[in-house]
Length: 245
Image (cartoon, rainbow, N blue to C red):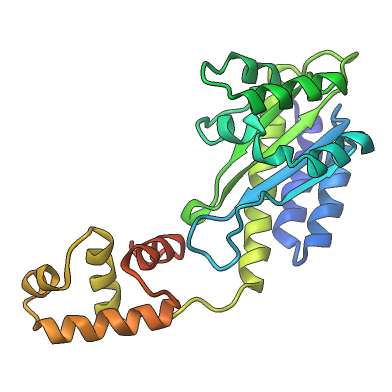
């Protein structure tokens, strides 16, 4: 890569750092991807289980895909059987869409997804896994059109870097708009970590040399702050909010 070829990536990095809204990020992304052979792109962020905005439906942002495909994707709930999501959750580096057909345990619905995608000539592209704080991960998808050559290693690396920067910038804006995280005291966090390890109140009392009543009070107070009613939910929310570190 030359300094000149990296100029759009440097400009995108600067725009990501300076963005304060989702609109800013969208504009910056469009300006950057105009310098690439990308014809279709999608971005999916899946919040970790336990956070307030967690939803079992994937929130997909996309542009450039055929309208008929987008309609089918939502009407037939294909996001529930998109093998790219499952494959992306097991990968670190970008992979080609065609690799999904090599998965040994594809379900009938996942095969249906791939067959429908092929009908729309959506078989030349890559998926880029992205990672964020406290399990806020996701992935980007890029289509290049059936008649185009697959991107070379240099372009894939460029897209990989751009995706990770864009994802972290998105998470930064998102977190600034979410409700303030519950403020747990040092002792409450200490007890929450032991709850997450599966210890009972009695075991926690012995570990920390506290009375069982004191531990019960701390646990109850933590549940109220986290807006949960059971130990599993408390552990999941604590993990999602980074309170267990």
